[in-house]
Length: 319
Image 1 (cartoon, rainbow, N blue to C red):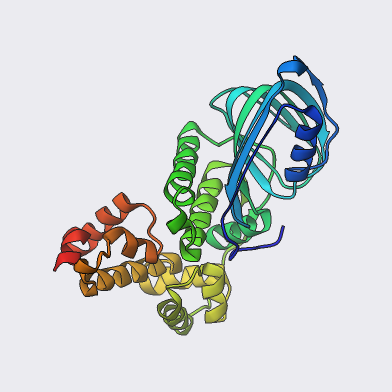
Image 2: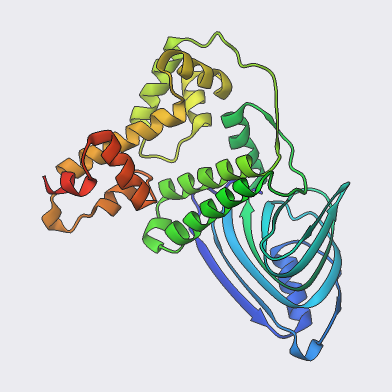
């Protein structure tokens, strides 16, 4: 799937009581398959909706009948959350059986066998190539996606909280969803949660230890000049002339931090400066300034700001 990071957020809703229309919709949105269905055809209903952009989206499907099918690869990662009904899926040598409350990761490649009955699914769609790239640069490990469950209940709760934050805090607010920077930060949040929740990372060798202070200075200058853009470790390392993993090690060695943490600190300082310079009589808000610099969760931003600057952001705006 192409990386359409600058695409706008799109919203789609679909409903039908016609089995043929339902099949055509599911094939067009997901992948080709030939289903065998059973149940009350007279009361059949499919409901679906989707909100997202090129790299990620959140989707919902409600299908009232039992269905068994063999499906072609979808081409993107899916994390499915069973809201109602039961689901069974097999891919290669992996198999999951899921009930309400369960979640599982569906890889982008490979055919899979699927069965469900009277199901309601919430799903998160992620661009597999973009996730793999970001996962490799932030962890230093090789990436292998497979049909799998969360590694623990605690990590599953962490994943759900990240999805709620993106769904309710960003995609539900058109003003926030219109910001490329906020959309990029939301994708990074989802990728981080995915890496922490599902068993996709395999350890690799040690980073190059020769990257020195000059590369760190180049990276820091690039961050200062581009903090308003949706940049990440890949872009920072390219500007510094080194690999992401080597730059990570160099930042820890010379600055006792990471490039992404340094970027976060620069954006926090920029938000602080904007709060001090803003005129509150013009209607500007703390939330708007925070969003400008990629902070989508107002409560966390206020708490972090207070820890860093010793007072709540609303006081800085009124000063």
